[in-house]
Image (cartoon, rainbow over all chains, first blue to last red; front, side, top):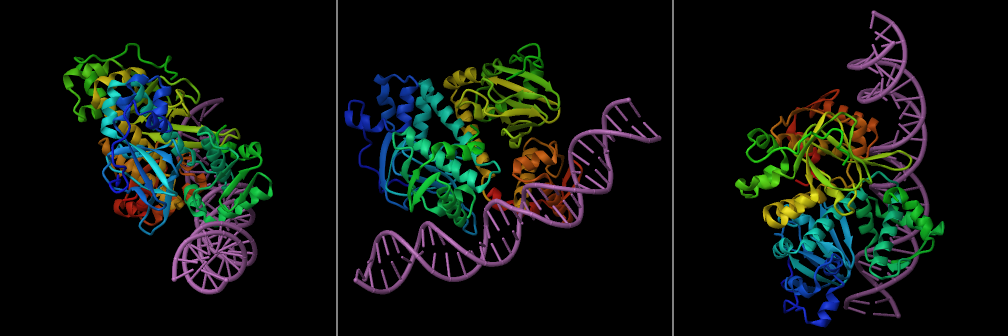
Length: 250
Length: 250
DNA sequence: GGCGGCTCTTGACCCTGATCAAGCGCCGCG
DNA sequence: CGCGGCGCTTGATCAGGGTCAAGAGCCGCC
């Protein structure tokens, strides 16, 4: 991970550093470990291997394909996009990562990042050294369990899109997913801003940008959503979920 | 896992059971652990939590969606297909699992199997209790590492198909992948039999069965492969890989 | 404040692959 | 041995979404 330039100066946060502790509990990881019954009095064991990095500016890369894998990272703020490009420049977007979500889990197997990760807006991260985390996981079963769970979850997420669905179904499912993820982090599920371009959405959903534009308009004309440039409002949550039901396998 | 009926009578294999040991080394899992520097003299620790199950006959289910998750399994013989169906009966195939490959890793996060697994031909499995394996993993770092690696690998595999490729590219990539996987297990990479129907391939590749049929014919007419019902020969491996290069990201 | 560039939208047309339909061949069963 | 069923193939047609092209709105920069 090319964090040298943007990395904050000190390795952050001891257990008695109240502010940092509260702040870092916004990382999915720490809080998930707590949820998993991790002994709070030993929380410093987790925190000593955490390093806050950023801010990454829009367009700045967090890591690039092929770089040696050293750490996974939880998004603290902003949105990260992971993607690969084929030789003729076409881009496949693997995912968007919102605050509280983890990037880098797909790098373990090859010990190299298999994709690029770029900030779509100003981004801050919690960086976890993976070797240290794995060592810790042998002593703290809750952390091991949590890692297994997160990895397994990502397999499921990756196969979600894999089905053969219409442009409308896919776009609706994407919007519902975003809505749920924002809701899970305490943001409004019905009103949020799209931090990625139409082209990014298209490359994620395997559509042409023009199709994204057209389908969004159709969804708006049908009264499911309201889109104003990148400002997004869900006006009929139930209706949208109905459109998405095949993809999301309700 | 609904193995009660077909499960072999005894929980199999102590470390000094030479035959079983050799046999079980065909499980990806055991051998991978060995590769990872696992102390062979302690191999029984792994073997006591292994249970050989099967044979499952063609069409018989190994597990079904929604069943509580208890174990992952390595395929010893035969092919397993995992799939989900939406309410109007359309099937999405998530994967095919050949000897040496692991099923059930995507079940960890929800503690339920998120898909169905069915035998496409006579199948034998090595069943690993996941809770026991996780416990063992805390004591044996090689096993933990291996589990992380396998999980991470599956994330990558799941995103392989996710790109937007032509029918020909997808089918070529599928064939190349099959070829490599057979080669990795010591089978011929150029001549093998397709254990799944055209419809299964179609549901895996997001195509219509008719398209699979047509594209196979085209690949045959162009001299890349020879297909005789389910007997498959790669006649131009390099050419096929070229067709598949976008998908496989060579 | 105006220019230039980029993202997004909208329209027209086209192509890949889905769908519908029919026929074939292999295989199991009576 | 003949019948029937299923999986596969092949042909004809159709449509969803891609591509190409042009224009509109927003924004930053000079």
